[in-house]
Length: 395
Ligand code: AMP
Image 1 (cartoon, protein in one colour):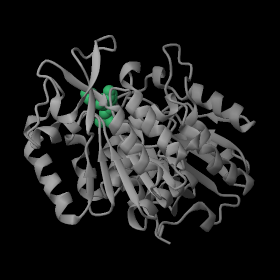
Image 2 (spheres, rainbow, N blue to C red; image 1 turned 180 degrees about the vertical axis):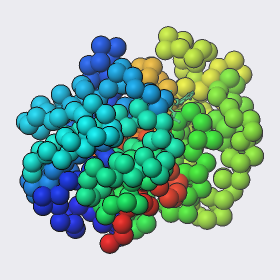
Image 3 (cartoon, helix red, strand yellow; image 1 turned 45 degrees about the vertical axis):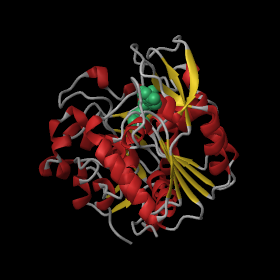
């Protein structure tokens, strides 16, 4: 089903291979990397290339240097961490393009690894400038995109460059496309999608694409209250998108017409203030007091959602069930993550906050797949074309 070339389908022996990775890692104020998951996730592609005698030239962005050289956003700490993880020296070029970089690239031996400086030190990067893309391309013989997290952006190092070189996807993007692509196109059924998070507006595209594909759609989190409003319930001080009430009503009707089971929480945990310490209680969905706000799905809803998730063959989850950052309102999200961990089918977390929640709650390693892209995986689930993938050569 993957119609894009992958690195196993191209001869890399002795070639200079330019790989776009996503090394946009979180750092503290001293420039120390606080989580190197993104570096670790790029290792299979880098190792494969080294084992197959390629000269590896890595490119990435880090933060938002806004098109200017700013050493606060230098990839130096990344080069150091990568050297440790790979067990070999990684040379950091002092620039992204230009003669000095060409010289280092030209002196690489088979199996060597170099890292270009932050591609966003040039404003041409985000503009997807042709000349800049050409200059990047001139550093290598083959282009590999393995940065799923930026695949929804048409930038020079993610898309433009592919016009000038033979191109393939790396192992990380391949895995993302295979697992999420299968879930969306040929899922094992029942296929259950669980959507939460703060706003309906962020997830409209996702709901509209999924409603044609899933057997059951579970909706929790802040967005549930806009649906309640559409059903005529009192929602008190709960988060509401007043301009999306009509749309929520249409989604409910559409689900019914298509025979998709769309379930909202039957009960909800309410509080007086948006604070962990606020007094709280659980009420049924249609009994939210005027002076309180919904902060989490209730215990009965958690039980119902968990049953459905556990007996599914494919589960796709995006968005927490409540304000999980506050321990008193994390139970619904915890129970959902636990049910996914116990599900024997394919379990996928579509990036962003739910990935953080699963990680924080200790269930991350029990999932079939946690997407590495927040925005990119949302757009993929919406059924949109991702420019960084569209640009790659077809098989
Ligand atoms: P998203 O980025 O759209 O997945 O939304 C995640 C955010 O939604 C988290 O920061 C949650 O705290 C927030 N959220 C979840 N449930 C609620 C709720 N009932 N009221 C307000 N915010 C919520």
